[in-house]
Length: 365
Image (tube, rainbow, N blue to C red; front, side):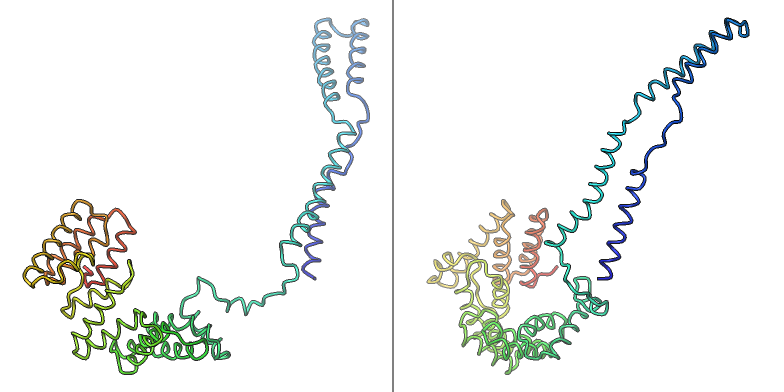
């Protein structure tokens, strides 16, 4: 209320300061300049008649006084009338006094006059985009210490902890998410991934159990399936890992973002991933090994030839690189990656997608 009173006084003072000069009347002239100059002309005529002024001097004086008389007459004609001056004062009063009223009328429906003060101590603690991530995490953790059953808060915090490399804390956060915000296949898969990250990338028995629970909730949970393949690979059961990943690729929807990662993993254990389209691979399924390899190499070369003519197909370049890696020709895979980067260098979005796919295939350079 005190602040409102101060603002009202400041507004009143500003309006008064502007209106005061406008409200003052201009001082009246004591006499008319034109009458004075006319009297001077009469005096010159008397002086000439009395012989007090020579004719040439009298003529020069008449010219000068005549000029001043004309200027005075113009000034009197241009002077504002009292009516127009009063009108200006009325317009000024209405405009200046109406501004605060208009501002108040707009603020009351659009503003927040009843909003209480926000103490400076709380402003310093308020999360902002400019604050470091560690500070924001500390604030969320402080909130969760007071509200440990806030499942949504744990759900926000858990992936951030993974990003910060605090895997043990992330494991605890994901467990609290499941406990307080409900169970799901994706949350079990995230928990298993955090447990594996905390173990240095090893899919432990505890992590594997969480992935199996995720699959029980949703057989199509991609992250859980992938890490079950990693667990089989780490245990030395490469055929089982290849079988898991091959099944994932068979069911993969078009454009699945994890497809390059699974194909690279399958190539790592010596599995045969569909290098080209599924229809093309189905056509060679019943051939003998030599004929199949020859046909696949022919299709790969045709794909390479097409991409040399039209290099905008990022997915085509990635299929070509995967095909070379499956065939064990890493040099050609690297060369195809370099050609692909050169082909899409002018398109930042395509180049970003290409680099991400090549990175998933193990070609960072």
